[in-house]
Length: 359
Ligand SMILES: Cc1ncc(C[n+]2csc(CCOP(=O)(O)OP(=O)(O)O)c2C)c(N)n1
Image (spheres, rainbow, N blue to C red):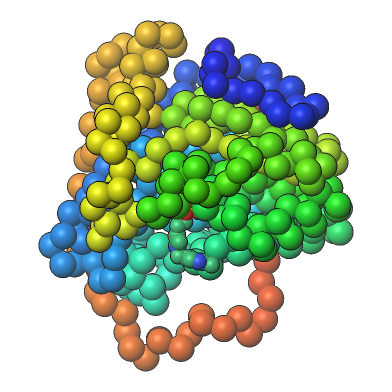
């Protein structure tokens, strides 16, 4: 593959090597992105039908980031996933049915109906439940990475956050600790141009990626709408972390194509900006690229997308049939009574980094 033109390493010693993605890997990357797109479209329509309590948040236009980054990890690695990163949950093995049931507060949701929203993580799949306060997941990922380092484990922690998080003081503490301790952590920053309604020019005076140098580790900028560019950068960062090289900050340039939540009409976004990014839609782009550059038949690509739509439709039926939780279980699983280790990812995907050794 070729690296995206937008990939750049800032003040760093990171080598972005072209990756050895197979035909099957590429089909999976499209599958995960198409599944995220369809699943979120379905969840949004369920929200509009009044079947989802509270509000609804999605990552439309940002599918390449969570899918490409999570795909670069091994099952034994750990993830702290935020509200625009559904693809990472799917890569780890969360099913569409459990995701949709979660949003509807049903018993078969990831949290068993204790959350009707995106504050979920499946410990069994190595994913920590989402903390809403920004940027606390960066601190949690740093803590996990510190534990990995102290135990001498061959694991990497990864977390995602928006550029808005980088304006909060605790983000700087998380970066500083990671840099000082050379923690095995990959920070994936999604610069989607707006933190709610605040545009980039009111958020920072220096591009976030350039701040990494101030904490003593590399910053890498990638085209966040190019799934392979994200994958390559995340893979290089994870390998670097495994080799004791410490953290990497990857800034993915992208655009939030929907409102902050379903309640937000995005009146503050110029229509021409949206049109510009619509033309760079990550799912459409990758589908076209598989045909143009990687020898996929157009019919095979359409079949992958159709299969994702069918999988989501069937999953929605099952999620809708899922009961509301048993009130008697309301207090179970809320506080940890004993420490239990997180489990490993268990998707049909077996972990690109593991599979590569066998190739
Ligand atoms: C400390 C804190 N302040 C405010 C919020 C409310 N809030 C949730 S998401 C968000 C915008 C975050 O923007 P960004 O980090 O760029 O991520 P994006 O939503 O654009 O992906 C805000 C203000 C919060 N969750 N935590």
